[in-house]
Image (cartoon, rainbow, N blue to C red):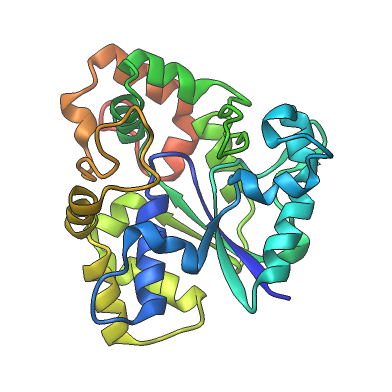
Length: 280
């Protein structure tokens, strides 16, 4: 039996980038890993096929309520760990907590987590453009507690909650088995930042580290998507890998929108040095 190492983040915060880095690091191949085949070492716990065996005779996951789905998560996570020979990396956008009494992550079969946090000012812009929301709609979405995703044929519901609650739920209690990584540090100092990931994995190989950083660069992922498409892209989005930059908010948010986001998420933004000068 193996164990789960969670790759967690609020949506549009760098989860996919982290997964691509890990895939390339573990592969050690002389060419980049195909982004459409990342399931080899990483798994998405939201996929309906994991839950289908527990749906009941003649039923599909679409026939189950969100509460019923959440009651199955501990068994599904035990299945994922049970099929693994060692550590398996599992993507999650669920907040760290419970939904109507049901834990959203099975820690009895988990070895730790990597949590990627990104400036909510940029998350707002990325979320709006990806899901075709207005900026104000994206702000509302990110402020809503217990907000989730719908029950779909291929994906069961996720319980995301607000940006602040999501960040706090994963990072409030430091642990030696929890690595918190800022998206902006992945951009500004990839060697230092991804070295921390390498260390959590119990590895040290400078050559492989630098190659994995190159093979998981935004330009590399963007080029692959243009050539082959990306199976995880939302149907309403024109592309998954759009810009990947920081500080996009400076050209996208008006002063009132900026102030509203800071007012909504001040505590967690302050923790990660995300509050713009003048709004402290």
